[in-house]
Amino acid sequence: MPMLGTIIETYDETPDVKTFRVVLKDEAAMAAFRFQPGQVAQLSVFGTGESTFVICSPPTRMDYLQFSVMRVGELTHRLHTLREGDPIGIRGPLGNHFPHADMKGKDIVFIGGGLGLAPLRTLLLFMLDNRQDYGNITLVYGGRTPEHLCFKDELKEWAERGDMRVELTVDTPDKGWTQRTGVVPAVLTDLAVSPKNAVAVTCGPPIMIRFTIQALEKLGFTDEQIVTTLERRMKCGIGLCGRCNIGEKFVCVDGPVFTQAQLKKLPQEF
Image (cartoon, rainbow, N blue to C red; front, side, top):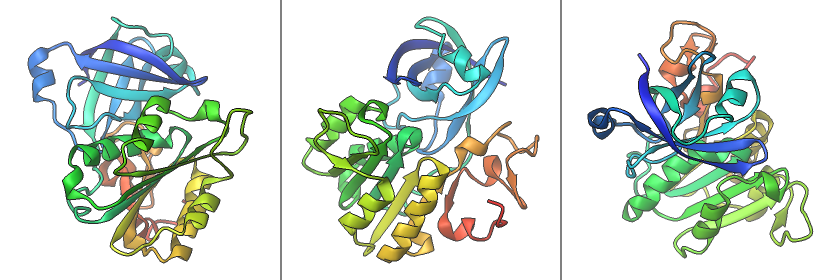
């Protein structure tokens, strides 16, 4: 059953993406809430319905749960009308998570596009909060225009940290843009990141993921070294409705996090 939450803060990331910070109304339930990077939750807008969104804050920072939502349909349009103090339902955590324990001691390459940075953000912040456990961290992130990049303040902060590499790119620059121009897979190829003792984690539009995986394979990454998340396909979140199945797999039960090795075993229709 959904737990009752309260929105404590909202702000716009892009013209069509809004971020919500939420706490559970029951303080004991909030204190007991546990999740792993990559897990999702169902957000309920009372009188409209519910949908699945990744928890994009890390479990190392539990003052609130953060969700970033793109306005694309009836439910998300209603979500975008909610303000601080409004109630909201939360059902979760759901799904599996990024295998961060298996990534310890390895170099991590994050590759994101648009709102695909949201699920990467939770793992990235988790790793930054446990920085000693991981090797070099690289973020390659792109958007249609500079205006369509999410988490702009954090991108600036990460670029200035000194213990990670941030490469930003846009398809269409504006007059003030001074960084890369081009699609994410092309930038990834240009950087020639090494697959040695590394894991690549990617999320973004399906076409970006497809060409990103091809670029990673050309760079020498194996299927087991490539990880992605398919939370956009999730519906009920508990394996009952059957709308997220791919062959014999249910994204909400078996995922949403998969390696490329696992994805290759799924039907070609994917």
